[in-house]
Image (cartoon, rainbow, N blue to C red; front, top):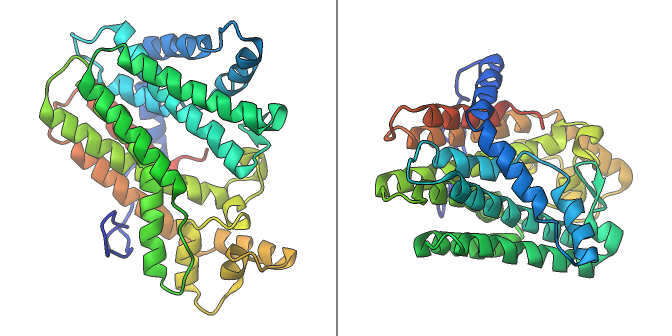
Length: 348
């Protein structure tokens, strides 16, 4: 079987997940962090320093969103993509990595407003504490600051890729996959959604990192494709974890996407595998009782749809690793390979 494809008119089938033990991947993940340990420390200082502004209200809202931590995946990809480039100074690499993190954070702030979220990563959201108006303005500030950092690099090609990512993010956020009798069409809409919602930002981080003070079209193309495939896998696993993680780990109810009427891959696959069970469809359509909702969440959580979704993500991971095959066998490439493979087995 093959994987969910990001192509018009396609439907989903699946492939085996890559071989390798979780212990190996976890060890490699530590290696990747050590490879850019100095850069990550500098990045953290730069990100938190963004909240040092004279406007007291803005300083407070920025402190909330920038102090919550996170995986710092996108800036790490910038740093790994530019690792070993003797022409890119640490200062410029940190500036680009910070811009990627601020752009991502801005989208989270706006997502929380759209979703009326009260918490994220175990902390109260800006919109919950200060209201939607200040939250939107905080997100706007982060968008502007990220653009300023990129503009300061003096690279029109990088700014072009950055701007493309912003536009794709907006278009992706506006997509709302519709649940119809044609599940194949729902799948295609889901693919388009996660491409814009998640994958383009990872592709941007990888591509611009490879472009910084460098001129290697092959590396740029490979890193863009790697980031896109990685992003697809990352979002699919996020959608799986929405069912398989605990409420304490998620900071929200298990199966929250389903409860909110959001169509994700596990739900789609469950409906395909269980055409006689209409509970998931009723929940997504907003017509289910509390008991039906709990049944639907539990049914998806314990169904083959979870493993099928993981296998789909694994295929995207294999694609991501394959896109690196034209690059030199450096520590950065090996770290990127291990990071991709870890996506499938992560639990947070």
